[in-house]
Image (cartoon, rainbow, N blue to C red):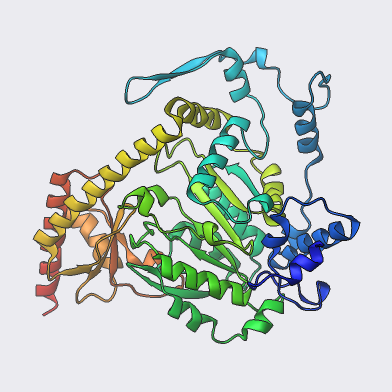
Amino acid sequence: MTVLERIKSCQAPALHLGKRGFKDESVTICSVLCENTILNSADKTIYKRMDHQYLRFLNDIASERKESLLRVTFNEQNESAGIIKMGGGMPNPKLSPIREGSLTLADGRMITLNEPLMEEALQYGSSTGYGPLMKQIESLTQRFHAPPCWPNTMMFVTAGSLSGLSLAIEAMISKGDYIIIDNPCYPGTLAITDPYKPRYLGVEADADGMNPESLRSVLSPWNPQKAREATHGVPKFLYTNPNGCNPTGGVTTTERKKEIYKIASEYNIIILEDDPYYFLQFRDQKDFPPSYLSLDVDGRVIRFDSFSKSLSAGLRVGYITGPQPLIKRLNYHQQCSVSHASMLSQVIISEILRLMGEDGFLEHVRKVQEFYRSQRDKMLDAATKHLSGLCQWDVPAGGMFFWMKVVGVKDTLKLTKKLSETKRVIVIPGVGFLPQENQASPYIRISFSTATKQEMDEGFRRIAELLKEEAAVNK
């Protein structure tokens, strides 16, 4: 069976190829590329057409990006044995004042960067990532997500997941575009999108994550078939933070994810799955709901992972996974910006993973989960003790935050300033998580990540004190 015949035999709707594709048929790209098949010349032409169709999701700048010649040369000279390396402008490692180093882990074990390894850690590296680390994150991704489109999937290491998210959004968004986001939404995402003056389509979320009914509502102005074909004036991507959501602490259920994925397929929308709190879900790892990446039979999910919450935030190491035609464009941008994530950070993360082993890393993650679950429970006790009747909340199912609605208050911005100035307690006003300007929010976000039990109890006592004072004044 040829690639074209396999395309036509697909059942699920997927990336629409439109008038420049195959007679306006909907096809599942994954089903074509996930077979170990030798492509003939006609099939290769179809492959190129598939690659071309992803251009619909890229803005004018991203669609023009090309691979850096210097990066190509770097890869060639490092992948070929016995080659005389006179092409790259790589500093001579013998001139570095740093020779070796070691780090002590919490359990007393040590990782040592000997001189050859330190030379590699201090030198320019591949724009996709440090080889041993790439193998480790590929293994983790296969273990937890088993992407259906794996043969057509590309990954690369980023300087934290936020860096990858920025690369993706800035490759897809143009000024004034419609974009679909969680409401409330992570402020780091809004900081990326706000300068483009987008038309936000905020989707309501609760303890069970993004609400599919709300998603259908915000998409109701568009006909699905016309939206699939359009290149302008329609939303092209959906941003969501599905696990331990910042700020709500919600975890999107399996049922909701499947429905949201179905809707994204109907409207031909890319899902940006921002999941830095994936391992901070307060349930057994075997009971984690499937990721959007694991459901991605179409090749429409770009996923962002991070080691910030599990190993180290300051090392700034994350990774991005998704359909190769899109991911390679994002990597082209990384090539001409930061070039690559810190090699030293990548080597350190890789050596920690090597020393722990994959099962050991997951055991470490389990301890991290238990710590944050315990922190949540302590904060829940303090909130129940001091804020019952004054605030309303859902119990976080993951992450680091409580999202509390202050009863009888329309906007918490002035309240949080007064709380800081008069009671010496800092929380974040809800307005910072809203996509639209000049909106009011009765919510506050409170973090339980570093506060002690005593600080939680005293902090909530002070919050309650201020709320009661404000209520008395406003009678």
